[in-house]
Image (cartoon, rainbow over all chains, first blue to last red; front, side, top):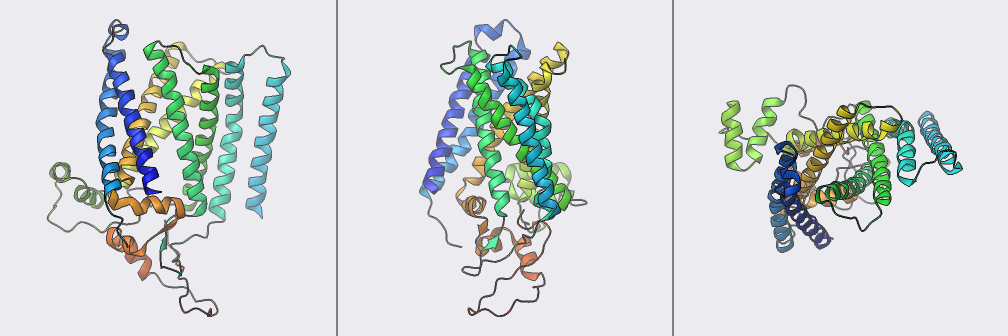
Length: 72
Length: 321
């Protein structure tokens, strides 16, 4: 079960990074550049945050996969 | 008996309301396509979904008998009631479906790309998932209000204590900033962690409340726009807030998964699936809660069973939420 969650976590993290990349691309793209900063800002900022917040999740998934399971 | 009657009334009302809306939709009286028809069906079912959530929350709260009891086999402590596990799973699945379908709609517009999926189907899944999330959220809120359940909140008069606990839980640079900003004495020992960590109570759960509250409120207003006319400017900002809170939900889910998929918190994931958490884990990481459970008076034991390990059941606010 632990490894299933690791795979799900990694998939969600990687997908978030890809969506973040798409957000950033659209934020700096020609289409939104004509519409002003108010419409450019959210995808740009959201994309950066998506990528930044995915990194700790991916790191924890790696740690969870490699760490032993302590007994309590 | 009363609680079952009220829940039954909620179910019957929901079924009748949905059936009437469906009958109108299928009769062909209105020239609606799938997209508009689904929108009307969703908007008309909302009062019944909310009523069903209230009835279920009342049913749950009025029949509440879960305390932090111990499992005789291994002395594990009950952390969540079975209905909490099911409602949490339902809300989780609904949230994932909402993030995926909502993100799909937003990206389609943002990239100006053709969708390989029929958008009517994407919206239909979005509406079904929204109904499930609204039901689960209303049921939880009703239940917590009726039982005065506050284990996931900071609590009255506990702000400074909570901030001190939070400052100790966070990575040192962040904790120092909080401690310096609020004038906390971080040389003092941290307050013992209760059923939920100080991070969950002061940051994680309030952020869930904010994002889910915003997404539901703005989503409901958007869904009602064909029933009650809403000025275009207002709808523009409502849509902007809806998209923004959808993005926040995606970020919050990343943070939530980051929190629970940490190796030291893995037993919490098990507790969310089974309801039970090892006593040793509670003693080590939730000492405040452990002390409360172990020091609570044990009720009069039932007739002595054959095995010498009776289950201790104690009544405690917040237990098994």
